Every structure is written in structure tokens, then in C-alpha cells.
Amino acid sequence: MKISDEWYGRLLTMPGIFLIFLLIFLPVSFLIVLAFLRYNFVTPIAFVGFKNFSNIFSDRLLTHSLKTTGIYTVGVTGISLIFALTIAYGLHRLGQRRLSTLYRTLAILPFAVPLVLSGLIWRWLLDPAIGVMNYLVIQITPFSEPINIFGNSTTALLGVILADAWIKIPFMTIFILAAMDGINQNLYEAATIDGATTVTKFFYITLPLARNGILYGVLITAMFSFRTIDAIWSMTRGGPGKATYHIGIYILDRMLSLMHLGEAAVIGIIVFVCISGFAVAMLAWMRKN
Image (cartoon, rainbow, N blue to C red; front, top):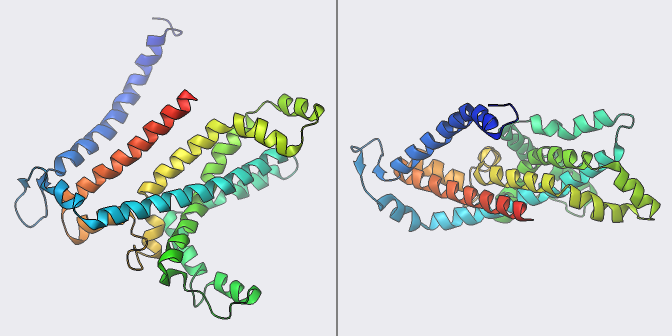
């Protein structure tokens, strides 16, 4: 077998594929088995069939948590995309000029902050009593009283979205910037000679050729936002009045508060199916186009 043979490459990837298979297959298998059991640390473990599924699908909190999670995911992904695209394009235009490395480092620094800590930071910034944001609002706007962002159902969700997006922006910036830096500079030079403006070059050269990097960044950011509750947990714990009740908090409530591990496993399967379905559909669309 030669190094250039296709089967030689497949043979070398087998150990890694086997390890990934174990890391994915075993937990998912245990999750599926657990979904059919009565597992609550009180009564003996017993097979209950689809009772756990029936209990979850008849619970109004499932619909509410999925709706909240969807809004949260779209909000985080959308804000991250807008800011990441702007920052990446600015860094791309900067090229290798003086201090460009410093600017790139500063742009990705928030990514080093843990999500829980990010939530605590934004909780302090938006606090109605001691928050810096409220102080600035009072100083530069007609408002004379601080705004209790976490006391309102709409603004509370916006607050946790901003905290999570702040971490996701540098992550998506890396994807988009890498795609932009891979574009052949001769295309820009040719477009300049033809009289193209900066806006024209952005929409007809940069965006189309950086599309894959942008879409991969959107895909991964959306997947992380759909399953991650660190910022929400450290800021609102699902409140006020379940306004920020992410499906991850729904799982924790079923698993830790109510001690129904079987029902929590059902919700986990729902999350797994949603994320997998979205990823498969988006990757198939990207491959087709």
C-alpha cells in the first residue's frame, strides 16, 4: 500500500474515528437507555417505556423553553455575526500594517474569559444599583432613574444574549478572518483597476469568497448557544418568571430539583436531535451550494 493510496489515508484515520465513535456512541446510547427508565434515586430503577416521553411532551415548559432557546440562539448568533463580520473585515483591511498583530490579539481576548465569568461581569455592568451601564444611561440620556434590566422579561433575555454574544464574537471573528485572509489579493487589485469601490469589492469579492468561513462560524455558534447556559445561569437562573428559561435549565430542573433523570434524558435527546438536525441540514445546504 502506497502513501498516495486512498485506503492508506483511511487506515491512518481509523484509530481517531474509533475514539470519536466511543466518545459519541457510548454517552448517546446511555442517554437513550436512560430515557426509558424510572430513575429518581428514590424508587427502584424500572423500565417505564414511553412514559417519560409522554410526561415531557405534555409539559408546557418544553414548548416555552424551546421558544426561549430559539430566540436566545438567534439573538446570540445574529449579534455575533454582525460584530464579527465588521471586526474581521476591519482586521483584514488592516493587513500586515503596523500594530495589526496587537489589534488582532485585542479582538480575540474576550474569548479567553469563561462564560460564567462573562455572565457575572455583565450582571455587574447592568446592575440597576451599581452598574456602570446604568450610570452612563443616566448621564447621557433623558432617563433620570436606573433601568432594572433583569426585572423585565424582555430586557432580561436581551441582557443574557449580550453577555453570551460578547464571548462568541471573537470566536466567530477567527473563522471569518481566516476565510478573508485566504482570498487572493489579485482579485482586489483587478477590481480596483476596473473602478470598483470598497463597498462593491466587499459584496462581490469578500462576502462570496469568505462564505464558507462565515457559515461554519454561524453553525458552530448556533450549536453552542443552543446547548450552553453558563451566562444565563450566572445572571438570571432562568428568571424573571422563566423569561430566560433555556432548555438547558429545564434539563437541570428535571435532573437535580425533581430528581427525574429519565425525563431529563428525554429532554437531552430532544436537544441532541435539534442540534444534529440543524447541523446536517446546514452542512448539506453548504455542500449543495
